Amino acid sequence: MSIAEAEARTTVAPPRTKVRRRKGHDGMGTGPLRGLLPLVLLLVIWQVVGDPSSPYFPPPSKWVTEVRPLLDDGVLATAIGDTALTVVLGLLIATVLGAALGALVGANRTLDRAAGPTLEFLRVLPAAALVPLAALLLGYTLEMKLAVVILPATWPVLLTVRSARRAMSPVLLDVPRTLHLSWWARTRKILVPALTPSVLLGVRVSGPLALIIALLVEIVTKINGIGALLGTAQATFKSAQVFGLLVIAGLLGFAVNWLVTRAESAVNVRLTGGGR
Image 1 (tube, rainbow, N blue to C red):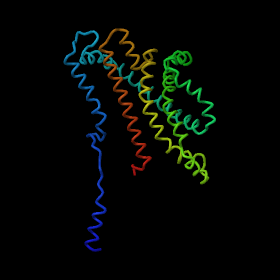
Image 2 (cartoon, one colour):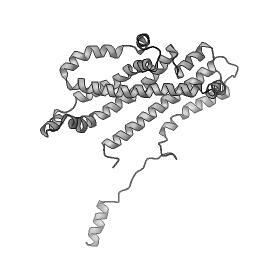
Image 3 (cartoon, helix red, strand yellow):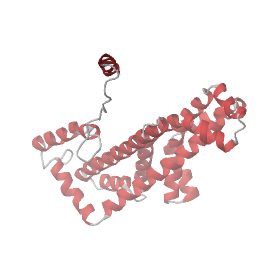
Image 4 (cartoon, rainbow, N blue to C red):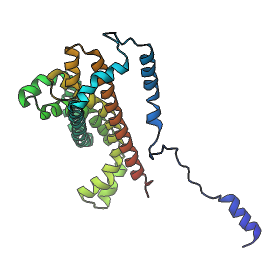
């Protein structure tokens, strides 16, 4: 090969370089942590200008003092675990249920038209209105909390998957029939990869919603969880403890959203072949 050809090849095909996203020392993106800086700044300002004797707006240091007994007794850890368990289980069940129903309804126009009014009625039904019925049928149990959480958290997944299934190209669906693939092979190789982005989009909406409903149920029913502690603190006029528990609930919501985002990124990388 001549020198001119070598130079031309070098010019046309420069060396490939890998562009890496900046990450923190722990290997995770630092973007979500930077998003907490405004909250930290607000708490610092509140601490500086806050009045420790205020019964309504005590400074953050007072929050820590009021929440610490709950932490020392193990009550806070148990409450966080119960709320987190409700949110995670409810979100998982709602995701599976919403994806299955969305794919089923979206695949059949007749079924979509027949079930449409019923689905719309259930979608607009307030979650708070389900609490008395669920408590009557299931008692004040984890199952009752899950039942109330699952129904509202199902709709974002169901609606996005139904729309995605209806929008799928008929050509894409004819390919597996032409190849005489089995139902399981069609589902695994065609439907699941095509509908997964819509499932993940619905889960991003359902995650915070599941936490909100779980806290609401705990506040109303006093079933063990962060919401029950919030309700008790409010009833006993412990404003500092209320603020502290609100921060903890917010951090739990931040963690849920972060986990959902990380899972979405991992699945997208796998679907696009980026993990090879």
